Amino acid sequence: MIAASLSALAFAATAPEADLILKNGRIWTGDPQNPWAEAIAIRRNRIIAVGNNTDVADRAASDARVIDLAGRLTVPGFNDAHVHFTNGALRLVWADLAGACAIDEVQRRIRDYGAAHPHDAWIVGIGWDPSCLPDHRLPGRADIDAAVKDRGVFISSVDGRTAWVNSKALQLAGILKGSRFDAAAGKVVLEPSGEPSGILRESAQALVRRLIPPPSHEHRLAALEQAVKMAAAFGITSIQNAGGDEDTLQQFEDLDHEHKLTLRVDVALSVPPTATPEFVDHLLELKQLYREPRLHVNGAEFVMDGTVAAHTAAMLEPYADEPGVFGKTNWSQDAWEQVLALCDSGGLQLWTHAAGDRAVRMALDGYEYVRRVNEPRDPRFRIEHAEVMAAADIPRFARIGVLASESPIHADPALLDDWSKAVGPQRLGMAFPWHSLDQAGARLVFSSDWPTAVSMDPLLGIHCAVNRQTPDGKPPGGWVPSQRVSVETALRAYTTNGAFASFEDRLKGRLRRGMFADLVVLSQNLFEIDPRHIARTKVDMTIFDGQVIYTRQ
Image (cartoon, rainbow, N blue to C red; front, side, top):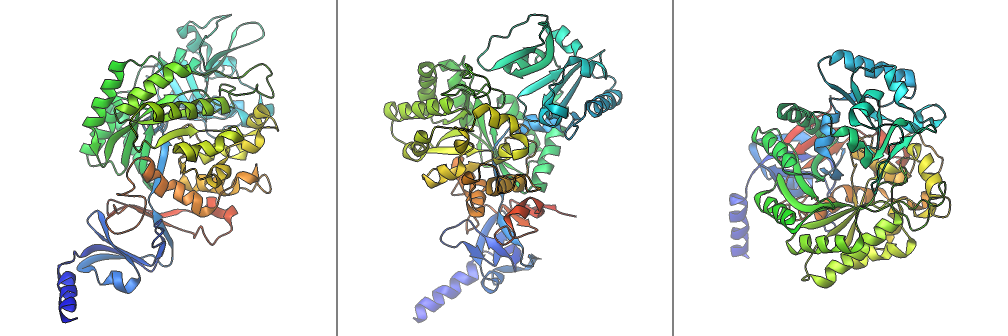
């Protein structure tokens, strides 16, 4: 007994002392073995103790900083598991059309932006929402011509799936009367006369986008720094960048060299349908090159189809409001499976964008094929978005070991009138089926898909997942309420499951000893408030790598 006491004293004397203490909190740790705590001790960038106030206070160094949480809810740092971060960053410095629900307001913003950037060859904007225009009228090239006609104008919709351009842009791109665009997931919308309307769907956007001069590296880096600061204000300490290339990695690396990257970044590199074995070898080289905790490559992303709202998602049955249209896939099953198996054999995690129920089934079939032909391992396959799926495919996620990577903000009812008409009442019960997936044992992983979604805010995502309502409570009872999930399920999908999805569950995603000190202090306790008020919650403080990087003023 005396020897044991002396041993304990010796350990206490040599145990590391904390330089940051958080006390008097209501701390949800995400750790099933110790789900709630009052205090946390942090030394440098790691958590060294989690427990009650008294025990944690004993770990403080004499000069430790102490933060009184005053009962506020504290959770692991949010993990946005599917975001197009570098693309979104650029949109922060483009013309902002968010909330412009009248043509004259859109025109005013375009004119103002053009006047403020007189030397730019093109005017690029983001955020117009077709669903909020009067009578849901699809705008046309003449609407933008009335604002600017001497320069090309390219305006991306709020979900990024549709572009609205002016006559100058169409002229420069060679899109003329009767033009057709033959691609799996894309369309040049024509007027009854055969003239191009100025609306480009999905991959048809590339006809104009390729003409827009790329911004300089300095411009990209400044925009990226702005986006990183915005992420901190949202409590986001980790992201998984969907799609990317060497340029994407270089931008993050350069920002890290300037000590301005307050995010842990996992990048899934884009794989086009033209990919060759040599292309895959290059991806594997990048995976070996980028292996640091703040910036690493794990995966490869394949885009199987488009989206339901644009009628470009691949469906098992035709669209309810467009009989005969099933959507298309970007890959044939056989060709895709060969590239899948090649990427998997090299250790790349497989991501597949699959929005429609036919694309989801193809993805599940492809992953089963990979399991048959490759050596057994822990691949953590992912399906991104899965907007709608057949009920028979729900149990396959858990059986095969596929992560359901979902973006709850896409199910904001304010954006879903056209979506609901497209799938029809027979398929509506499987719309964004988070509850069904959760009950079937699938692991949910949540994200924003920003800038495809209107916001990167995880609290707005949690609100949508829990309520299936707009922040103002519409519709009453929620949209497809049977697919709502609990607050804890949504939080876990934004924290612990996100860390699992990037193979970092031993480093982050939970608040326990040895983990990275990434955490968020919230203004309201999500477990105690009326769930309909979740969207009103603010981030009071964000701590990344043991440092306070954001405090709400």
